[in-house]
Image (cartoon, rainbow, N blue to C red; front, side, top):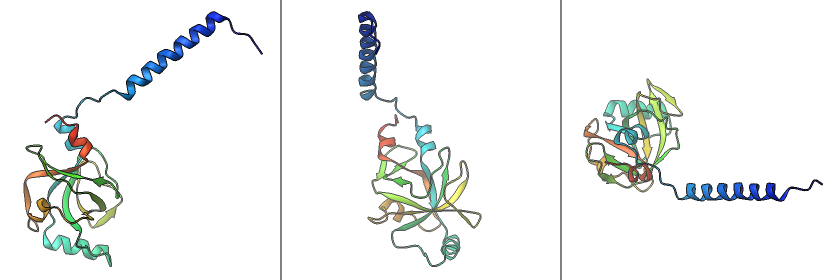
Amino acid sequence: MTELDPAEVERRLAQLHELCVLGESLLHATLPPLSRIALRDRSLVIGGLLPGMERLRLEKALGRRTLGTHDVAMIATCADFVRHVGWMTDVCVCSETGDVVDESVGVLVAVSMDDRFFDATVRGRSASVIVRYPAGIPACLRALSAGGRCEHPMLLCTRRDRANTAW
């Protein structure tokens, strides 16, 4: 076993202390707020509900798994982040004002493009998506008629992302 020089031990203890202080400061660090564009890029942008015929075609393609009473078939775009089946949203935000329109937990259960199903959205492409709301369909989505377009696109995102957005 090699003996360490006391000066070397002191130097290493000082380095450990510096690392400890740095680590503690990172625990309390706050991230800069997201911009509106960043929030849009991280969200599913909902343009409206699927028209009746497209909804029927989607149900037929799903086979025996017809849309349930808690499922909403929508037209969505995912700008930058790919969202996989199973991704969860817990707020619906107006893209124009930034107001939280509804706070309901939803799960992305299906993504369809060109009559084919995928396990995730594709960057920059519109898709038919099905989001399941276990506690019931939010009022803001029930208010849309089938095939109806949103006056301002709605953003399905996480509460944390919305809270960290400078509007």
